[in-house]
Amino acid sequence: MEIFATAAIGGILIGAAAAGLLLVNGSIAGISGVFGNALTGKPGLWRWAFLAGLIAAPLVAPFAKIEVPVPHHQAGLITLAIAGLLVGIGTRLSGGCTSGHGVCGLSNLSLRSLTATGTFMVVAALTVYAVRHLGLPVGY
Image (cartoon, rainbow, N blue to C red; front, side, top):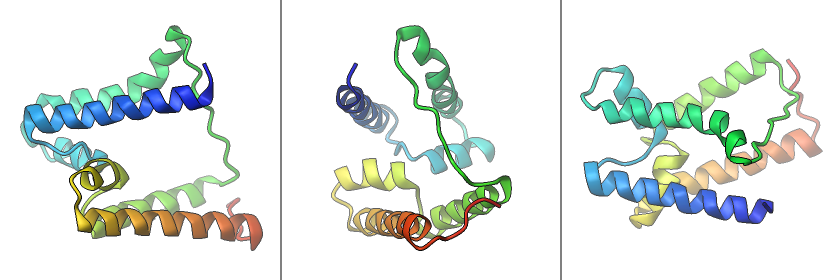
C-alpha cells in the first residue's frame, strides 16, 4: 500500500477513535492525560486498554501485511532521556500533548490548543533545522 494511503487510513482511524472516545466517555484522547490518569489509579479500565492498543498496534500490523516504519535516530541514550524529560515538561506546561491538543483540541476549535500545537510545530521545526543545518550535536 502506498505511504499516502496508509497515512490517510491512519489519520481517519485516529480521528474516529478520538471522536468515539469523546462520544462514549466524554474523554479527550490525549496520550499524556490517559497515561497520567492510568498511573494515578483514576477509574476506567479503558485507559489501560487504550495504552495496550498503542503498544500492540505495531506488533500486530505485520500480520495484517501493514509495513511498520523503523525509527532511525542518531541520538544516544542521554540525549533521548533529556528529550523525553523536555517533552514531559512541555506536556505539563501546555496542559496536554500533541494528540490531545492537535487532534482533539483543534477539532473543537480551541484557541489554547491552536497555540499549543503551533508552539509544538515551531519548536520541532527549529530543532530539526538546528540539528541538520547548524550542526547541533545529538549523539550523546
